[in-house]
Amino acid sequence: MHIRCSGRLIRSLATAVCADTPTSCDAFDKRLMKTIWLGWILLGLLVSATVQATATPLVTEEEAKLPPPKGAIAADRRGILRGPKIEVVMPSGGVVHSPLRLVLKFESFGGATINVESVKVIYLRTPNVDLTPRVKPFIRADGIDMPQAELPPGEYIVRVDIKDSDGRPGSTSFTLTVSP
Figure (cartoon, rainbow, N blue to C red):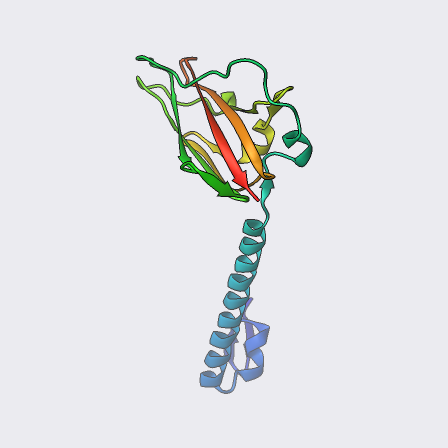
């Protein structure tokens, strides 16, 4: 909003006070804008740090105490298949500490795309525990990137099932070993 002060157009009420001295008025405007921008940047950093600091529980203590599955567990696929492939990128093996970064990469073939709605993440126990709702915010067409997955100490067998746009299934199972 422009107002008249001492015969000059003034951009805001904040600068009306210093309208008689243009150089101090410009300096006041610059300081005010720097302060506002600095405030927004600090607020953004604070919110970002708060969001990153919270770990997402992947498996609860109660679920970790469930009995292990009975019978055989499906192994990785063999042979030449056109269905999508799932690769565990992180953790890369061995013993990890919680919270951990869980990264899976999806790859489709033959011009198909990954059907994001078909992704299922299952913790293999008796009974099985569906982890999909907890992982859903981190699912993308090219994979899963969960920056801070929280698990109690123990060994976890996880199965991931996906389908591509042609309806072809893909699946993999992997073990997470979490130390205290």
